[in-house]
Length: 260
Ligand SMILES: [Zn+2]
Image (cartoon, rainbow, N blue to C red):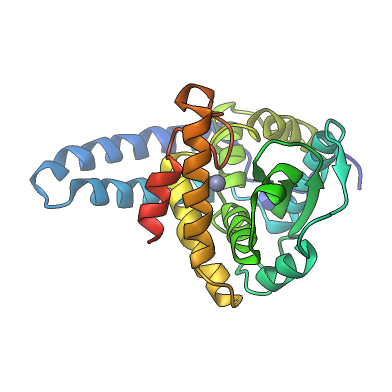
């Protein structure tokens, strides 16, 4: 394939979409004001935000094939800057395969690469690709802990967190982009932190996924217990904003309490 992406139904016509977005934001604001009288305004607000998100996603629909293709191109750009290595601890392949059997998005080409760096981190990009640092493999002690980390990263794609950001960005820029431009947008975005809401959602889905694959949820709890200690050592000022795990938002402690 060349650099031209077959976008689903050619829906990348953004002028009408932008007007709809303004309309949706207006509805969103009115709904938020009405929420004052309700019992659980935060939850209601999140539900409304979800409907808004869903509608925006439909406006810029990308097929799973489009997403896989974006992932392939983005992976080439990213791995050019990384030192890849072979796994030297745990049978990562076997744990990964067990988890992938239970994904909902069957057409996404889930895969992983091991990156040779001490940083305790793992991260996912659109199209199901995941990078696991040797730093986090050294840090982990059990297969259940690793299963949670991988399940969490898979979940960012299961829940479309990765592709959603690219879609919003394309929508905001009023482009009718070709693949090269979308990949560039994706590249600018991929290392940005997820929202606290997305992280919690990926934790929840990650726990469900690891259980389906026969792993023990205790792995998630012990992982966050150790991570909380590491965060203390780092100090809040040295936590990396873009690290998917050692972050000030949300902290490992908060995430552990939720999972429990
Ligand atoms: Zn995450």
